[in-house]
Each structure stands twice: as structure tokens, then as C-alpha cells.
Length: 171
Image 1 (spheres, rainbow, N blue to C red):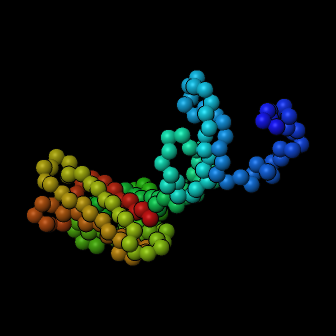
Image 2 (cartoon, rainbow, N blue to C red):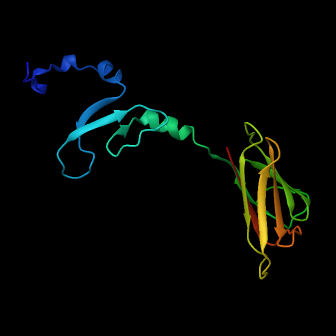
Image 3 (cartoon, one colour):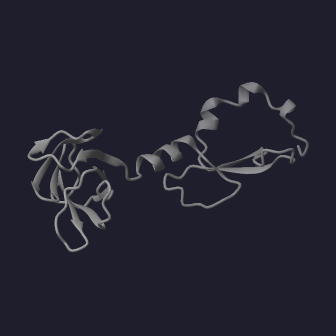
């Protein structure tokens, strides 16, 4: 019958199980958000979202799988670079304490464990209040539960500074 219409399809023949078993399929819809006439829209089920299309849609499960596999900030904090010894960070999560090991050098003690010691670390700090010295702040992982932060002036001298220092770990 070349003239099949939705009126000729019994509701009992359209079951949820038949619809759920589809993977990549096409529906009729308007993805422009305007008044354009409906067109075929492809719905993809791909967890990597490798397809680049302006008209295809991804399933909710595909989007969730993709986002769940992205690297995430696992630990972050700010700490007072002038304190000596081991201290709690002033703010953040995933960090139990910060230990000043020498002038301009700190060990960040994580409360979370990385899968390996090759995670990404970021650190930043501002110049001393009222000062004009150029400072460089860097961070790197030293184990699955610790990272190092160094802050130096332009001549390579360690510098504690008078401002807060920020740290982030991503994996």
C-alpha cells in the first residue's frame, strides 16, 4: 500500500520495545528552531561523538557517556604562601594540606588518588602587594597523591609572596 498513513497503523502495533531497539535512526522534525518545514533528522547513538553534523542529534546516553569520559578537575585549592609547616588550604576540595618545604616551594597533599603520576597540574599567583617583581609559578605531579608547587622571582630565587597561591589538578 503506497498510501500508508499514521491513521492506518494501529496503536497496538507501535510498542515501546520496538522503538527502544532502534540504534541509529531517522525521524521527521524541525531542528532549525524556526518555522522551517520538517525534515529528516538522524539520531545517533555513539559514545565518542565523533560525527560532526549540523543536523544529526545524539542520544542522552551518548552525551552522558562522552561527558563522563572527559578529564575533570579532581583537586583544587588556594593557600597562603607565607605560612610555614603544614597547613590546611584556605579553600578548595580534594586537598588535605599544603606543606611548605622551603622558600617558594610547597607539597600539595591530595585527599584523592590519581590513576598514575602523570596528571595535569596548574598553579598561579600574583605579584607581591605593592611589588613589581616578576614571579613564575609552576606545578607538577610528584606521585599519585602529591604535587609540587614552586614560585620564583625572575632571578630564580624562591619567593613565598604575600598573596594567595592557587593550585588545580586534572585527570
